Length: 268
Image 1: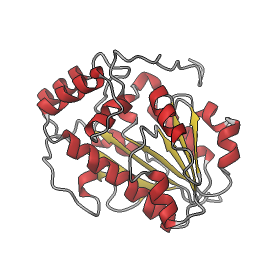
Image 2 (image 1 turned 90 degrees about the vertical axis):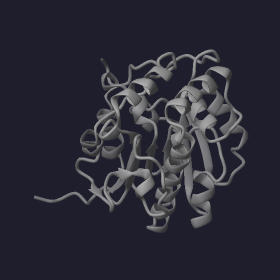
Image 3 (image 1 turned 90 degrees about the horizontal axis):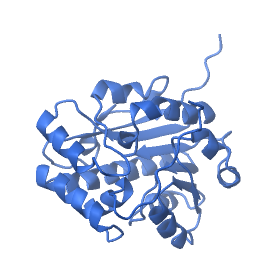
């Protein structure tokens, strides 16, 4: 398959969509009956799902704050999702008002709500599918905002577990990490199968079986491999509940997150 030939799922109000289900977990109202039905099935199987979603959100915002405080002034928010508050742009601009944030998403509901909120200073939203990373990197709207010769934060949280192996998540990550400058950061998170009850995995897969994208559980080792060639920050790849600002949650279902820095090119 050609690198950027993956097709974007068509909009559907009768099929659950990951961004809208996530909005439901976070207590939002920008979701449809199908999204709520899928979300309720997950909550029936794992009642702490909304708290885990909030913990993942907290990990994302912590990554933003830490990287901006480290000097990053550009953020690429892949799969930006339906806007909530506090959000990536708010946290980034609170730490440094000169930060530029570009959100990327392919969900029409997300795009509509994000464009309505685009009055936020330093924030831009473009339509894009992370399964076609080179199309995003070549987008004029992207290049009007992001200077890839300077350090950036690539934020990709709770997105890759909706990318199948056939859609090559490693290819997606590598496209971005190859494009960004040394001193840039990658922050990502994904649900893991490691130490997870197979029955619970089956129940969550079933909840998403009719959604616009299936949920894919991967081992901790697999998720860690996505950071190959980068320098992981402490505490490494860990449950999003175990990052600084810990949240006590059941460990029967975990989202693993990590932040890594792209090192300088080593000369022979």
